[in-house]
Amino acid sequence: MLRIPRKLADTIIDLAYAALPVKVCGILGGSNGIVSAIFPVRNISGASEHFILDPAQQFSTMKEMQDQGLEMIGVYHSHLENPAYPTSDDIRMAHSPDLSLVIVSLKKLDNPILKSFRIREGHVEQEQVEYR
Ligand SMILES: [Zn+2]
Image (cartoon, rainbow, N blue to C red; front, side, top):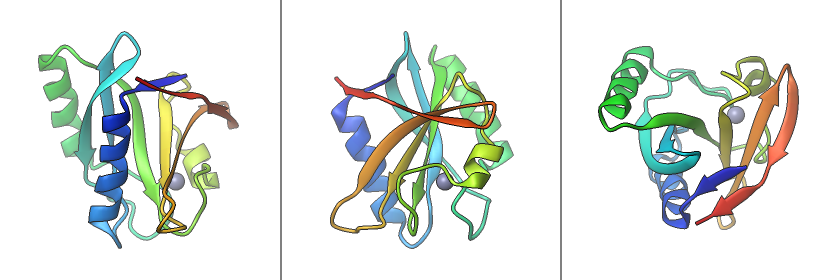
């Protein structure tokens, strides 16, 4: 289950809109399994509907989170053409089954969809999002 304040979920959606036509990605930081901060990271994957966090920025973000006493709870990225479901590249490149993979789809521009998944050995499991 992903536990996230509604305001932060809305922030991810706002960031995705603001970046159009570029896809966004970033890291969800928090503690005790609850997201408390969002750290946008440059997406260096280019055109396809998956994401690669800029390694240098990922490193500095991890450091920043550590300084704030936060853990990495998950990662988020936006889809522009695809629904809010992991693409084959997302599945192949999944970081860890312990991380939530949040996808915001702007396929229907007036109806953004945010969903969260876990990827375990190539298997996609949608997880519940609890807004707090
Ligand atoms: Zn994707």
